[in-house]
Picture 1 (cartoon, one colour):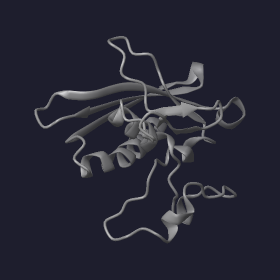
Picture 2 (cartoon, helix red, strand yellow; picture 1 turned 120 degrees about the vertical axis):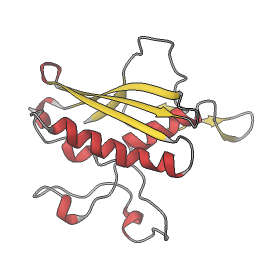
Picture 3 (cartoon, one colour; picture 1 turned 45 degrees about the horizontal axis):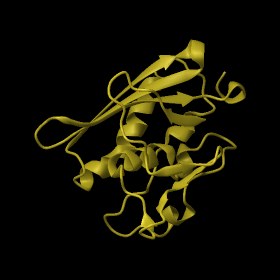
Picture 4 (cartoon, helix red, strand yellow; picture 1 turned 180 degrees about the vertical axis):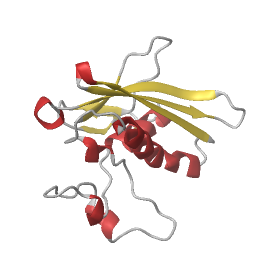
Length: 166
């Protein structure tokens, strides 16, 4: 399963500070400064929150499914720390049946909660819509600042592999 930004109908957002290899992404480096690129910090944070697989409790795993995510989350979390990423990957072997959009919304909200906790935004809105004819679930994400204005809006397509999702 892949989570990809879909083209915006309005003014485009800055692209995340990530370099896509065709298989995975890595943080972009600003060679001139010798540091991480940071032209689109919020956009990058949202993509990392949604596209990084979060480790789950064994009881959440479907039969025969190995756990994903950073193994350190199982033993290295300090008090107040939250695991990074989303549980959207748990939906990858599921059919796009009615109700899956509610689970996707819950997983996305949980993943993006860290942005509220870090005061990058004060509110997150997530809405998922099934598009079974395209083997896709559309995920609309909006973040809001203290003044109530939207500071980030993006639609993502959560794509199912033909073999896994149908």
